[in-house]
Length: 228
Ligand code: CA
Image 1 (tube, rainbow, N blue to C red):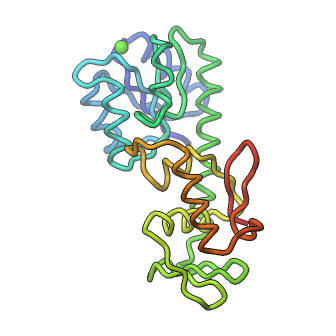
Image 2: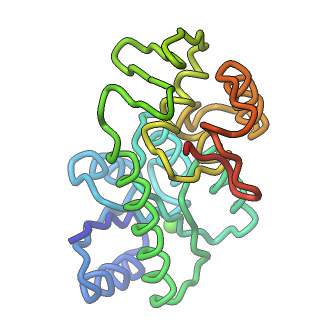
Image 3: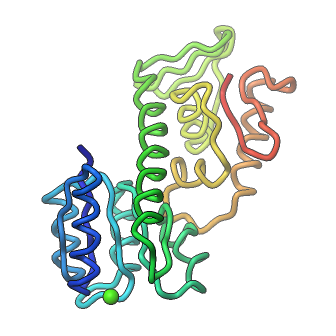
């Protein structure tokens, strides 16, 4: 059963959401201000956070930013009355997973929760699937303990980020990641660069791996990259 934390200062919204979550088979935990919310994120370890923006003590933006900068990737759906803030909320600056404008319908909220949880489960499964400290792909060998990469037995010299990027793709082989996702996962949520950064690193990686024909890293048009 997934546990959902509702951080919302309006008691009637909290109550309504809690009632519907429980009716849909979720466990619901409540917090009425930002400080209590932040504490419960760590004590309750929810699977998803419903986060209001305007909150006493600490607002939703701060909570979101704090979680991501601490490396907490729990999915967040922002409850927002300010639709103009959406870009900011979903962007790299805060890193929420989705938002729902107030006032919202309960059915729509439930659908969003379901979708975000499903998306999160898929990426978690992908991250957990290749835990071996050494990955071999068609003559390419990545040793995660030693941070060494060899191609047909020959050492390949990679920068720190190149190794991180290659390693991340290799650990999640077959899974397509968008440039934004790669920025998030490899550079971290606080990184203020643009998605072009990813393309540049991929280009260097390909050069070093002699990967002209996308033997290792495949470009998926309109989507992103994946390791074959
Ligand atoms: Ca509020």
